[in-house]
Amino acid sequence: MLTRQDATTPELLPEYIVNSRDLRLDYLRGLIMLLVIATHLEYFSIFSMFAWERIGLISSAEGFVTLSGMVLGLVYRKKLLQIGFWQATWSLWKRAFQLYRVNLAIILSILLLSHLSFVNVNEVTHWINPVSKQAYPLFPPEQSSWKDILASTALLQIGPHQFQIIGFYCIVLVLAPMALLLLHYNLTPLLMLTSWAIYLINSIDHLKVTAALFERAFPLLTWQVLFFNGMIIGYHHHKVFDFLSCRITITPVVTAAISALMFLLLAQHNPNPIFWPLDSLSILDSSVYSHLYFQWFDKTTLGIGRIINNVALFVVMFYLLTQYWAIFNRFFGWLLIPFGQASLYVFIIHVYLIIIINSTPLPGYNRFSINSAIHLSSILLIWLMIKRRLLFSFIPR
Image (cartoon, rainbow, N blue to C red; front, top):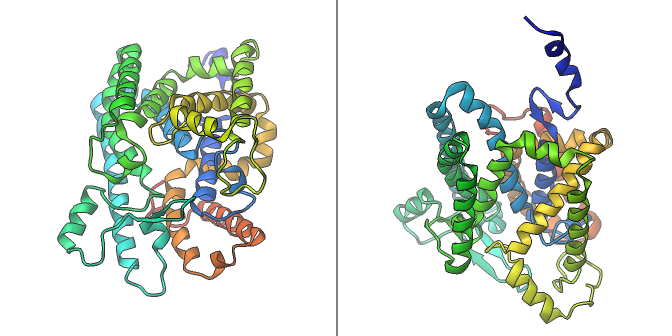
């Protein structure tokens, strides 16, 4: 029997909580997926101008990994209580295996498409250095035997760089039940200490524990710190989110905002002209900036400055979303929330969009207006596919 308090509780829920789902996280994940599209479709446009380390020394990858951990911690705290540890573990491992199969399917499909003369797969079979323009192959040469190719595929040693972070996600999902167990038994400090210790040790040793391709860009022992600390935040979301959302605790938000502005200023010193038509700032000497960047903000080794920059920006954005949800939701919720709720679907579709667009003459024109139209059209096309649930029964979300 419902008490008076029980009956009125749903009416007291904020607008960003729908069916026990926190739409603020979906909103942020959707924003990250837009940045993924803008950076992986490597054309200079109104979108890419602000996607390449211009709002700070950050990338979409850190946000994707951290938010994935948060959502998992939030969702599986409930599942753990509802279905028990072993069922929750089986659910996580099934998801990991599903992502592994998706990786295999994408790799094999690209290998098949590479044999079609009218399809240009170069953008997904090579990583091209944005500064030197030197291309590095990510797939085996044509003369390789099918036995070697299949072995490399099974070990995720080949694949498009635009999708390799999902390989990383497969592994951390396999490991997630151990973290979930520690959280369930109130051993959060032990999980946090272990995760950060592994990160700090690997910042010196730079070990790679798998032979997978993702280890080049996202070393498992380093990047796990974002995922598992994201899990901690998600598991304890009531305390953390309430703290970040409260107007009374404004000091941490102001501190984060000042830090984010300082990182924004520092990012404008980037001498790399890629996707930015204006001159960089010169308050710091270029050699000083380069030293700071590679010492504290390197992406692959996940410099501690980069982590702090991500934390500061998350705190500010989460607070603003909470306080002004109606405004943010009205203007961009229609686009970002569906993207965030179907992030894996977006990841998969955007790989094939890269191939399709690069198989047309459009990228060859290399004009700002055309490039902006390519990005906008790609975003709206994927949004329409999500709204129409196109191939939802076939493509995982």
